[in-house]
Image (tube, rainbow, N blue to C red; front, side, top):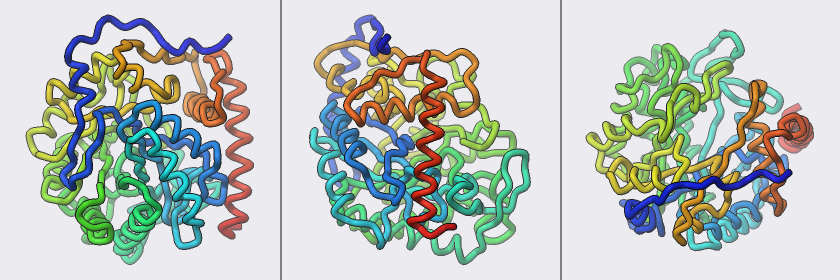
Length: 409
């Protein structure tokens, strides 16, 4: 039985008009509307760090479906610190023509396609890389070594080089990933970052490497190329980044050349609660976004918990954020922005799972995305077991390719 894609929604009202006004970014670039396909780890790379035909078709589908901006999640500049073996790797070994094709097709609908610049750090997939974060940790579910000062100091140039390659390939912009517990998020978090040198200490010191990365990326790509950043409103972990510290980060970003600040939250730390747990109905980080609006003039993108056209419209029309980010909704309804633009108030009908195992829901959505990329989508919530089995096989096969290609043993 096919998944029911839509549920009824009451009339969304005039607030939805705000969703379809263009958004001018500080660098001069223009987004055609206010609906963004936020980054997800689609894991559709071929195992050598290159995009596949299916991945290219997926981003074309999202662009033609009306997204003003789609962001390719977790694009690595260093294959030793990848989040997954399906990640893309854009470095000097990569074939630029294959990335150029993704850039072109992913903007076919008139929207932007950006690459999210990633480095997993302590959350590197142990099957394909080395776990190294700001500090050595030996915690339940997570043991990692520490990056030395020289390795951290090299990050700005490394991010800038990947950004420059993205620009040369024809992508519309880049997003610096400083959320969800990956390396830059780890550097910002007192739970992960226990350093005693210039990269540790109070939040003002912990964020300086992020500021340097932004400055170096801007120097590499020039004034007219969009640069975004994704940050956590909270780590949702005891001892992690607090909302007060996150506001300090936002205020500091106001003095940089950043063009779009995406607000999200939570981490993929082993055993951490899912962002959706205990957050209630509606956008999860609305209160934080309102506070952030008071300390920055930069455009804000709010992501997490936004499921209906009326919710999205109220966020933008009410000035909570300048744009809304949706992720799993695009895995259910890839043409959702175009439907909303044409006045259809349909809401994606998200699957419900009874007692899923840890990682099971992520596996289901990953395989659902793969189905869309292949031109069909038949998974239902009853197929969770089949999705997990397919996901496990998919990850094992690509990990073998990754280790061989990048000579990682």
